Length: 98
Length: 134
Image 1 (tube, rainbow over the protein chains, first blue to last red):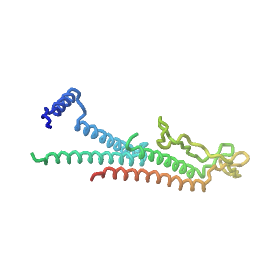
Image 2: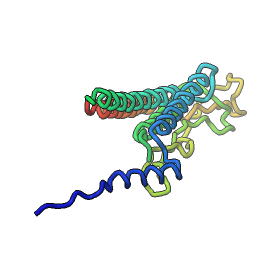
Image 3: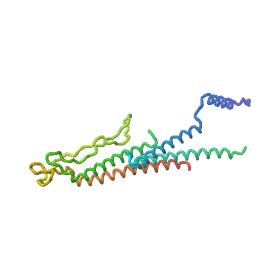
Image 4: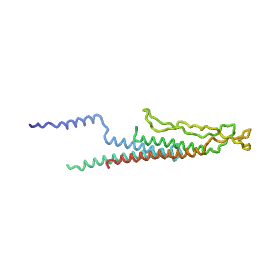
C-alpha cells in the first residue's frame, strides 16, 4: 500500500507562525540580550554607586560593596556564557555544507 | 526569589555582625566613662537581632531591630577628689564586663567570617554552574 504524497503542511504552518509573530512582535534573541545587558549594566552601576559612597565616606559597608561587585561579576560571567553559547550555535550553523 | 538571594542573606548576617562589632567597640571605648554617682551609669550596648521573613514567611536573613542596654548593678567608687564626685564623694563606673566583651568580640568576628564564607561558597557554586557544558 502506498501513501499519496501530501502537500507540505509544515511550511504553511511555519508561515502562519511567522505571520502571527509579525503581528505581535515577540521578544527576539537580540531583545533578550539587550535586556540582559541592561540589567548587568544596572548591577555594575549599583556596585559603582556603593564604591563611590565608600570612597566619599558614605553609609555603605565594605561587605555591601564586595557582594554587589560579586553579583555584578557573576552577572557578567553569565551573560558572557550565554553569548558564547549563542555564537557557538551560530558558527555551527554557518559551517553547514549547502 | 532572585539568583543572588543567598548572597543577600549572608550579607544581612555580615551587616548584623558588623553592627555587633561596632557595639563591642563602643562598649570597650567607654570602659573608662565615669559619671557622677547621681547619674545613670554608662551601660554596655547589646544588638538585638531578629530573623527577617518575606511576605510568604520564608527566611530572608537577619536584621537588627534595636539596641538594648546591659542590666546589672554599677560599681560606685569613693573618689571625693574627682570633679564629678557627688556630695558624698562617689562616682559611678560603667556597667561593662570587659571579659564578656572580649569573648563577644571573638564570636562577632567569627560570625562575620562565617557569613563571608557563605558568600564565597555561593559564588564558587555559581561559577561552577556557569562552567556547565564547557
